[in-house]
Amino acid sequence: MGRGTGASLLAGVLLLGACASPAVEESPQTRPPVAATIPPETGGTPGVDEIKHSDNVRLVANVPLEAPFDGPQAWGTDLAFQGTYAYVGNYEGFTVVDIADPAEPVVVSRTVCLGGQNDISVSGNLLFLSVDSPRSDDTCQGQASDPGAPTAWEGIRVFDISDKAKPEYVTSVRTDCGSHTHALVPGETSIYVYVSSPSSVPDARNCPPPHQNLTIVDVPVQNPKAARVAAKPNVFQDRPGGDGESEFNPAGCHDITVYPERKLAAAACFGDGFLLDITNPLRPKTLQVVQDENFAIWHSATFNNAGTKVVFGDELGGGMAPTCDANVDETQGANAIYDLVAGPKLQKRGYFKIPRAQSPEENCVAHNGSLIPVPGKDVMVQGWYQGGVSVWDFTDSDNPREIGFFERGPLPPGKQLGGSWSAYYYNGYIYSSDITKGLDVLEITDPLTDPAKAVKMTELNVQTQRSY
Image 1 (cartoon, rainbow, N blue to C red):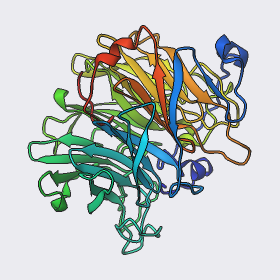
Image 2 (image 1 turned 45 degrees about the vertical axis):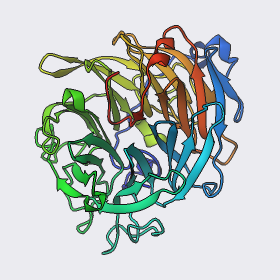
Image 3 (image 1 turned 90 degrees about the horizontal axis):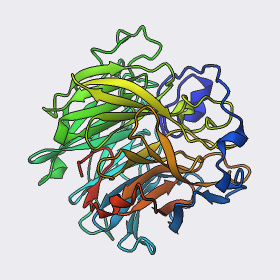
């Protein structure tokens, strides 16, 4: 759970996804009428919890949230994959699921380790969790704490997952302002963890202003207990308005995606998008900073496989607001596609937003997604909270299009936060971490995406891209 701000909108928003940027609301432009945006096969807006999907997408299995993750705020979050296992983050810990048979997934273990939002990654026998809510200490049993308390802790936790049935807590590393998300950069003997953290409410002790850096944690593979903060590079020095005069003051990054093979990283840093050179992983260099008049909260970034494009997502409303209804413009709360041209330089092209208008009761905005590994094409699957799961093709950067979807209707009365937090493709199936419904396993059968079934991955951390 992120730090709050003085803005009334973000006071609720920071509960979930954005946790830091003073987003400026603009008068929305009117989108096309709802009836014009609903494909005929949907049969209209779904009812409460009713499932709707395109003809080429089907639900294969569901792993519901169960004890100990059955409390009111035991929200499902991010996903990572390794071999025949899926790792599912939760505000109260994480779950290991055996997906050897995607149609019959089996829960191997549930580890209670309190601390939002538990963004999750795996590498070898190590598992990493991001904690962005001040705790009384670094243990899994630590309680919520005042941010300025002398013992307040937030940052990165490390587990040993050699035994999937009994993950073992190894160590932790405190980081300034916590860790909202992170990305893994493999080194020869170490894993470098790029920590993204906000600073919406700086405090002199644990989050001293100005917070204009990212934090890099060095985790020695053979001795993870020796993990430490190795660098705090200032990637904001070339940022427009970086002197504090901008309406988006430097506040850390929300999300960084690295592409080690290409020595590049793309960072979504609230008011800006960054292109970074990570030839030296401890000294990333800013190549370019881009801004977008339609973006409120730069949330995440995804390279295409060729490394010639970057998709940036805007989390307008921070995940709590209904920004996919008929009253919000199709360029807001959407994805922006940038071509990576000679330089390298980012050049803005088109926008993509789900073409199915949602009800005003459904929190919906662009959120976590990954490439579907279709050789020679640019295809992505993405979670949109209560907008569901969308599969879309951006091979033509100017004219992206949705080719498939899966969604549920609004939550029952009294519940406001739900839907797909993350939707990723892994070895023939789409896995969606639904905030309140658990892990959905979906299959898409489509001529465009069928070639992806021949691509087999041994590990997937979406914020660490690898070529296929």
